[in-house]
Length: 194
Image (tube, rainbow, N blue to C red; front, top):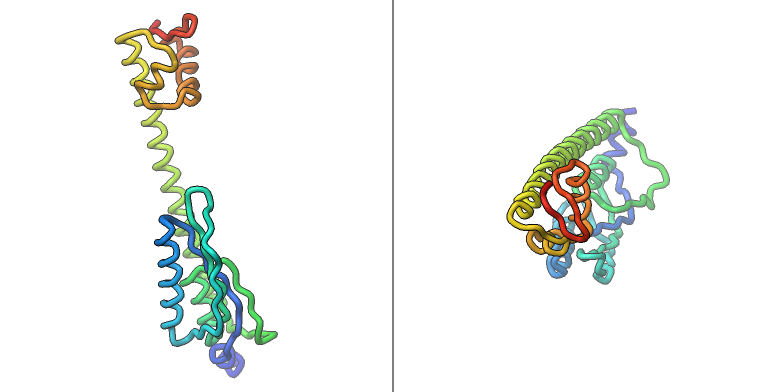
């Protein structure tokens, strides 16, 4: 068993992997991917046999580019480390046909995975909490802005949109809620305080 564990640590693993960068501006995406590949090249436990860069593509307001790498990685421990450190989009082991992994390596892998998942979960929950807080405060600010504007003058939805800077379709939701709460009224196309 000890020989198998040592063999797994020393065996070379050939794989294909894809690493993608998404962001903006365009030049930053291209430079970041090149720097990422250069960083991989400097790792003594990794050898890049071949690399193929895609053309950069626009995806909405962001830019995307990927590199496909043929790699040789020294051992299963480094393979797992590579996945955590470089976060490839995909990885396909080509050789050897079978890998042995020690119970310690699989335990370490699962514990690292769990720690990262818990960290991501914490970040998502924190972001959701902050987003809910901001949404609630933004709604209160818009609510008060509409009431203040209508205290000064009766206004149409178009005028309220111009004063608040909020799109008419989005603003209409707020004014309809204020009408339901009986804080404002609508006469023809003009809104006023009750």
